Image 1 (cartoon, rainbow, N blue to C red):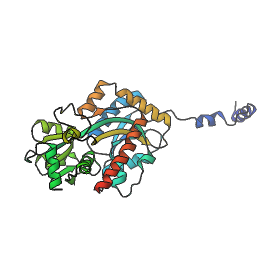
Image 2 (image 1 turned 90 degrees about the vertical axis):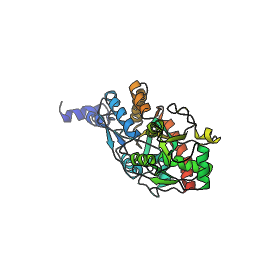
Image 3 (image 1 turned 180 degrees about the vertical axis):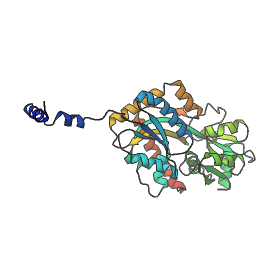
Image 4 (image 1 turned 30 degrees about the vertical axis):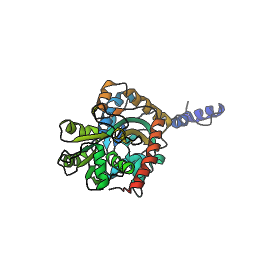
Length: 326
């Protein structure tokens, strides 16, 4: 049957389009090509989590899964890249607190997190530990808070930058107690850790996996963890709430997967389902916990709820503290 006869036959059947046109309008099956997980930092927990995820997702999705680093500007370069990527599910982002705090820290951004990105799934939480250099004659958090009240900004602490979980942990402590410390932003954890070990930074609000070996070796003194429960890695170290006798302090870092807004729900659902399966993989859980994380998983709605909660409460902490981007 030639094309003319095919069109005539289709018209007789009352078809509005040719079979070829109908096939062209059919939705593409996801995934149909390489999936990219964008990490908006050079090193750290997000990169470790992304690589463990990519290795295991590739066979499950039937397509290559690669990790692509796009660091800079407090994670905004990577965030903006994904926000403007094709909304087909093949480009996703792994990030955490900066997604919701950068809106308050920066005067203007080329993207809006809640408008331009859609949650897929929570990956992990990472708590921080408040530490002091041993040369500082401080034995518990109450003593540190008292010194931070009596001599505000006398002591320094360093973090990977404004909006990081360490920075916000210090600002939240200031809001709750009035204890103030001078924030020194660094380009990453490595130099900040070295300066803390050398006593240049007397105080630390450090990711637990970074601080752990130095606390165990006696090179840093751990005063409290910033979550609402003690860490099994440092069971003898109290929470901030326990150490100070309060009940409203909580600051944990978290990581989630997000996609560009308008990504088809089917692609979001497939990614969520396949990543959730990883949380039944002992090897994947070992990677998460080995990097100091508490595995999460769950629904896209749970990640959205966390983001909206932290956007509101931490945005207010940033405004009260007067903190600005580096």
